[in-house]
Structures are given as structure tokens and as C-alpha cells.
Length: 528
Image (tube, rainbow, N blue to C red; front, side, top):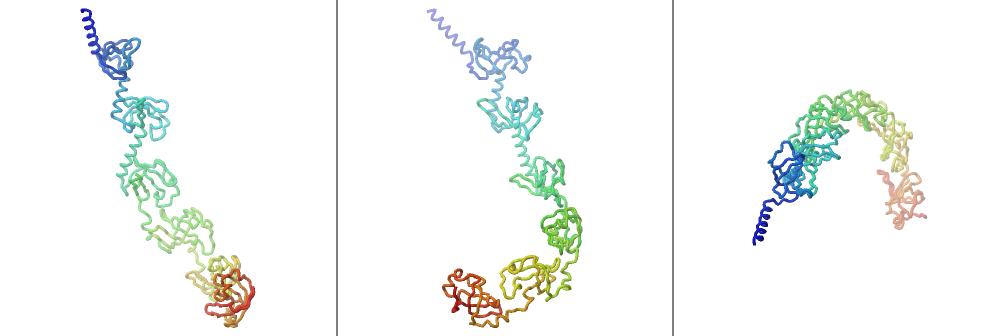
């Protein structure tokens, strides 16, 4: 009995002894008390059935650690040889930081950290625990000297959290972009059209320059650099220049700002009507030559155009460069001023006398002239009487008898022709000429024998959908309408007739006023 009672007491005491120890799991953070400090380790009582070993190198200041100090450590398990608990203060701190971070931050959160080490591909950052910063995410632009960042403290954006591996990737670039975007939005709201702001030339392109306004970039277009002509922005600006510019447009949706430099000064076009009037002579410099004319600068910001047609009275100019060159000084006459459209029309040929001025002294109605065909159009031909003076022979004035569809049927470009002056209009610079007027009108004489019902012979000259044209032996031309043909021929014109065919026709009537002759095939004896 005594033996049994002793065993029961022993068992109860062992159970009570076990219950005095904490239940600790691997990976758990616990508080412990330093009970012994050895040469390289500290013995820690964590309330477990065995003490734990903590390497002194994990302590922030081993020399300041004393017996009785409380320390938070992570329980890693039991050492198989010694049976003592293996502890880690650093891992406890890292685990605690990780738990705090997961509880209070996520991907996209901003945390401050210190770059403490450069590693392959980037940096290690202390944000309370170690995080990786890729080199590509350290700044907005690629950086050559990465060493300059080591030891510096910056805000970072958490871009990735790997819970399984407990890894964190951060980005300073993302933070800077957020700040830049916020600054840009704030500045766009503060700016107003018409406001003059200070800026710095950040970049120069062919179409303008980008001006940094302190958190936002604005575009200064080449057309808004100067009231005068600018071929390239580099003629006016240099990189790094500081200047005042005016806000001329704001796109708040896309956060874009358009700037102007010339708008700060008064437009020279405001007083253009008082300074320049039609008919006055002006001097200027040729600034640009294009196919249709030359631009002349009269003063900075004021240009006029000499159209190619206003270069010479007599010379046929194919391109303005034949007479003018960029940079040359010219004197011209103002032809027109359009202040609203900001256009001034100039004339170079007006500096000399026009060959049209004394036209009546050289040409008179009824004169017979001789000239070269310079141009052929659908409605007539232009004949050069002298340099700068052309006369028009209308298609209807080419022949008394022949119906000319196009002038090219009768003449060719470059040919020399004789014609009679029909009318002169120097004010509108027009001369009407005629070739048929060189001879007497034969119509009255030739139509005397063409009485209604007369049978005449002729040759087919044209076949149209409403009939056929027949040239009579006397040279006059008449029309056989389809209504004046046998039905079977009218139905099949193309197969019934051929150009050049000779045939007999009857004269229906002669319209002397409109010079038309109506013919008929009905009753005529013809064989094809």
C-alpha cells in the first residue's frame, strides 16, 4: 500500500511539474529572461522545460546585456545533442516586423526605408525588415552610378509581397511617379489661361519646346515662339534657358498645357492697317520661297506674299526662285491688306509699267495681228501678241463653216497664226481675236441655192445618237435627224452609216439666224 501511494504521489508531482512549463511551438515568439551570460551565448529562460541558447551576436549591444534582462526571441526547436531550446532574436524581430507589415500594409502601400546594401540586380532596403529594390525601380530614369543611393532614406511603394517566402519588393520609381502625377494634377488646377509663369527649357524638338514649370511640362509650339518666322526652335531657345511664358490653353482631362512666348508681347498686326496701305511701296527681306510665291518680311512678325503671278508682267515664271532668293532685299507694292486673316499681298511687277497701260496706242479693233499659240483650252486658244499680252480666239471664232468641238482639231500649240482684233478691254486685260473674221462670211452666198426640197449630195462627218452630220459639196454642214430617216436606219445608226459615206439628202429648211441646216433621207435614193 505504501509503495502504491508513493507511486501516485510521484506521478502527481511530475504532472504538476510539467504543467508549470509553457506550451511552445516551433516558430513562436516568446519572452525570455537572461539567466546566464557565457562567452558566446546567453542562456535564456523562456518558461520551457529546458533553457534556451541565444548567440550573443544577435544582440544589438552584447556588452550592455545583463542577467535578468527580458528579451523577445523566436523558438526554433530543440538541439538534439544538448536538449536545449534553440532561440533567435533576429528572427523574432523579422517575424514581428513581417506580422506588423502584413497587418498594416499591402501591395501599393508607401513605407519609408533605408537603402543599406547594393546587391546583384539592385539594393536591399530596411523597412523594418529587409526588402528588395530592383535597380530599374530606384529612379524615374536609368542611373549609371548606383552607389550614390546606398545609405539614403526614401519613401518606397510596396509593389509585391510573397507571403510564402516572406519576400518584399519595393519601388522608389513608383513613388516618384505618384508624386509627379499628384504635382501635375495640382498644378493644372492652379493654372489659368492668360497667366504668365516662369519655366525652364527642358527639351527642344522640330515642332517646339517643352518647358518645365515645376512639376508639370508645357508645350511651347514653334508657331507661338515669335510673331516673326522661326524655322527651328533652336534659333530662339537653348536648353536650360529660363523664361516667362503665357498659358494659352489647358486640357484638364489629359493634363496638358499649351504655352506661348510671343503672346507676352503685343502683336505687330494690331496697327498693320495704319502702317501699310494698298498702293504704297515697301522694302523687305525674302524669308521663304515656295512653288506659288515668295514670303517677304516687312518687319519682325509682319510678312507679305508675292504670288508667282505678281512677279513679272512679261516673263513667264515657272518658279519664284528664277527671280528671287532667300535673304535678298526686294522692293514691292502693297496690293491688299487683310488684318483679320493676317495676310498682306505684294506685287513685284507693279514696280514697273504694265504693258496693258498703253494698249490702245498699239492695237485697235480691226487690226490684223500675227502671234504664236501659247495655250489651248476647251473654249479657245491664247495667242501671244507680245511679252505679257495674250489674246483669246474663242472656239466659235475659228471657222465660219466648220463646227469645231475642240480647238486642237484646228490648230496646234506653238503654231503661228494670223487673226483679227475683235475687241480691246485694257482695264480687265482682255483682247478678243478671231480667225474666221479674216475672210468674208460665206454663209449667205452658200445657202442661196439651198431651198427647201432641193436634193443635194454630201459626206457623213459625224454620227451621234440623235442623227448624222453631213458635209455638203459646198462645204456647209447639215444634220439629218433620226426622225428624218427610214425607221430601220434610225434604229441601227452605227451599222447603217459610216463616216465618209457619200449620200443624197433633201434640204428641209435653212436657219440663217442660228446657222443650221436641216436635212432629210426620206425619199432619197441611196444604196450602202
